[in-house]
Length: 303
Image (cartoon, rainbow, N blue to C red; front, side, top):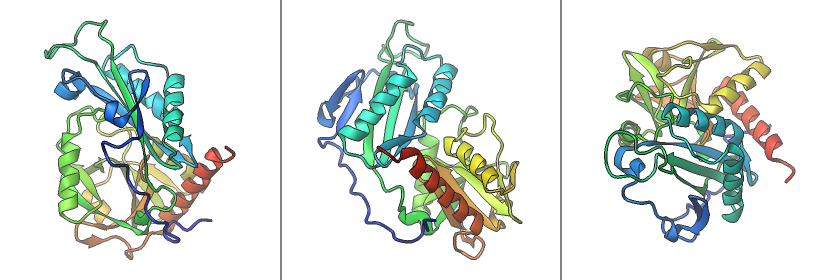
């Protein structure tokens, strides 16, 4: 098994905005410098749109099909139609990974209600949606944060439909900035004493060998990586309880970890000023991260 906290590879250099990478906008592959969005786009004016992010591993998309199912669900919730099919999106996303020589990284896609005169109600049903996507490198297999990260607790001030993967992310921006200012990697959002989720992740705790995470509802996003972890935990015969937990529960947990498509599985070794467990990645977290990486390797091997 791969030890996620060892053999840390050098970081992949980021792509500087304004460079020559290829993007995809409304049906065309374009150089980044030529990719433009209209200032009257409702995504810019109202955050009237949704998005998805899928990982690239070994040069291939990982779980893009699951992300595209969620995209369709988010689009339906906002009544945005006229978009390309999941098959077409999959082809675009894989093409972006290949055109930009991404071996490990992310592909981001966004859909908005389109361009119209600024007015709150929906524009005409014939208004075409705006669709775009881009890719960027990011170390996924040898993540330097796999040795353990810190969380900073912050109040959850978001709207009531967090199950929609909306591009309206100002509350998360503020939460993550507060976490960064405190020297933490991620925000731990809570509401009425209960943990909801991370700024852009699902939060899990382990107590007495049982993994616990909040059940799905409108209060959290149905994480794709969350679903995979539930399946892996069953395979590994690690008990799981889908039950809400408090900030106090998190602070006194034996282990804590976060999951997301952009970070896979990362151990949490500190919350606020409290060390979690013995301050190192715990056995359940390590087993799940290893299992996730092995699954990713298996699904993307054999190009």
